[in-house]
Length: 272
Image 1 (cartoon, rainbow, N blue to C red):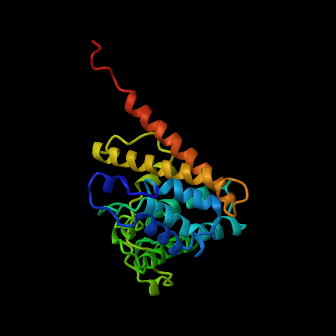
Image 2 (cartoon, one colour):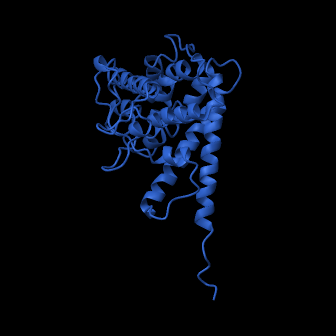
Image 3 (cartoon, one colour):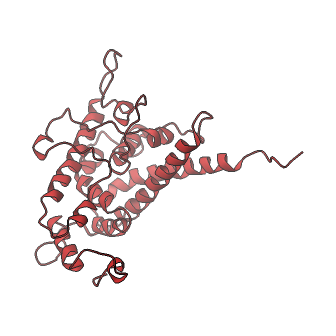
């Protein structure tokens, strides 16, 4: 962990002073103090540790958004993990962070699906609760991006690992207070699969789109699993969020089972 990374051992150019850079990153992320003592919830940091092996950007951005999740889903007594609408809202907020795929032309974006934005002339009304949540999460990841870009590190490559995919965090740190800013349109494919409890794919969905959604759904489930298993541990401020992540993981599990059933229940072309 603290010696040369595998890439350097194999002769590939890697980050110099990797251990020192790693310590500086977690200091600047404010996970530890100057004496390397934990300043954050240890269950949250264990989640970051497990996710960062494969999903470093998602891990730190989820952590940065936890106060907003807590405010909207725990402190807000009008929400409940037993309410399907609130479960869907949690799922959409989670996907907003870890499934940042741009919406294709002609498709319904996640923002419009959640009524965060509405098409002019349709008579539809914006869901203010959904919009407030979307704006808050967008502000969290925008602020973290600005914070990471302000890091004084000798290794720019390590900073890039903490930024979410899709270059759509175009908001400057000074503009995140704009309540009208919900970012560029995000694809709603995974959310639609889960929300509608659709059993597999419709016949007109292309093979390429099916494979894309399967991969994204599985990835969502993997991140959700690690999040849930860590956050639910005792003595965590955010433990109550596990009631939502548990419900969402169950939805992912059943959706993947339906997809696999659809894939394997095929006519035997060898039968006469």
